[in-house]
Image (cartoon, rainbow, N blue to C red; front, side, top):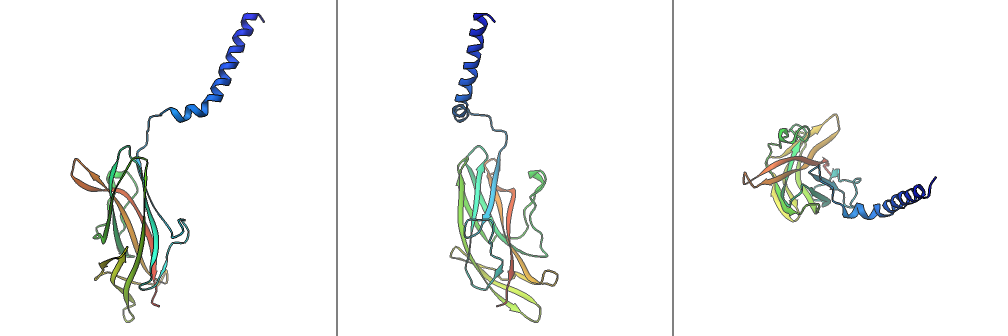
Length: 204
């Protein structure tokens, strides 16, 4: 091998080593085009884990969860989360298929949480809630009086859950629909995502 070829091999090796050394730094400064734009929505328990969610609910007992929204849309977004309640016979919103084909629940919102979230930022909101209800033994039904959410009293007259003999529980769902403000329509639109807590309303 000639001296010229040795020199060329030397510079190739030096170049490869330089790229290997510089690659961690380059990965930080290079900006790659984003191809996915989406929003995250989640609920964590009182310990900030996805484990010990409240289930067996006692009348007028306080429970705490954390609602999180992560913005990856590429712009500062204006979100609204609608808090709703349904029993086992009422339909949940949809969150599968193309986002334009997903539909919210037709149940009224009990409480709204609205906030601006910057791109690549996370909003986390603690939610402390309790239910007030009565048990109608003759009808095997729990009838709600109200929901207290972060200190705000919400009237739930007309809401009820019946005994589910298969699950052996008075089953209800507190769920959270994500809505996104559309500036062109000047309105919030369902963003195709929701999370839900399943409860057994105890009669103790």
